[in-house]
Length: 91
Image (tube, rainbow, N blue to C red; front, side):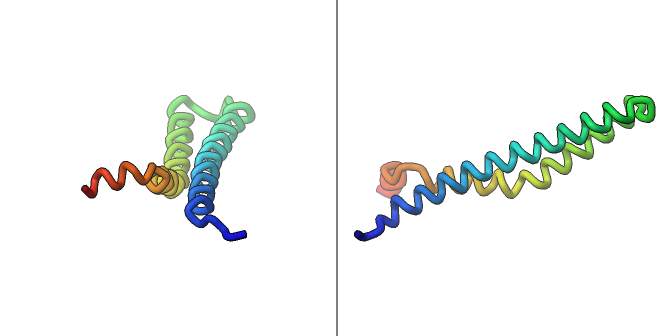
């Protein structure tokens, strides 16, 4: 039984897309958990300004970690577009 490579590549791209979205979600959830931990266990130690800075640092961490994953998702979405759209552009 021959392997259908276009179908297999589309499946792998779809799986990479799903994995990227899941990873971005996990990173965001972990960051939210860290902020909750700081807020719950050290409420008297943080001023509003310090809490803001802690949240800003978490946002920067999420953006740095998520950027490659978002780029992977964008590339997968571009490659998963129907070939009809590509052929219309060419001619």
